[in-house]
Length: 152
Image 1 (tube, rainbow, N blue to C red):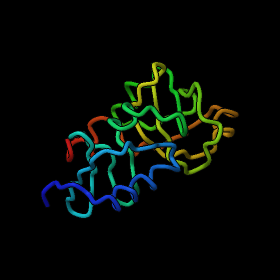
Image 2: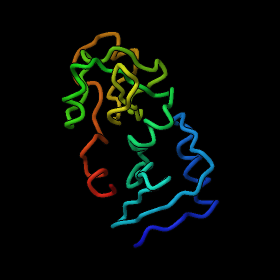
Image 3: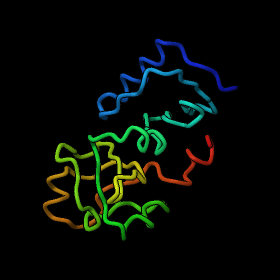
Image 4: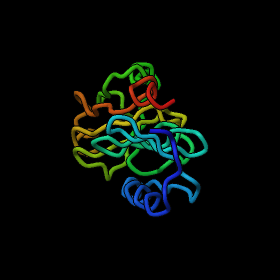
């Protein structure tokens, strides 16, 4: 299906889906591209939100809007591994939103607050920061992944 603009009602539904993640999508025209049950919403020609079994804000959206909720800051030594698709280990985390719960969607950023990936936390922030051991976040979006290859 060709890319087309969404209705105001569909745009509101998308904004409502992003609000619990601390993301306030600007009131601009939004386009959608649908392929085999997957959807990608575009703002100003950039893929902003990917939807299949879950709604995932893309790195374009995160770096433009800089949300201050659900963040995980990693040390610079971990970044090259993460942008190549490696999951995040607790040892590489320097800071995180204390409100993060187990199975929460989180936004991973480097020490300069540039977002580099999106993941799902395996534990709560207090558990991760408390023991600093093992795999803490499973990646679901990173540079060069299926979302980026399909929709950019």
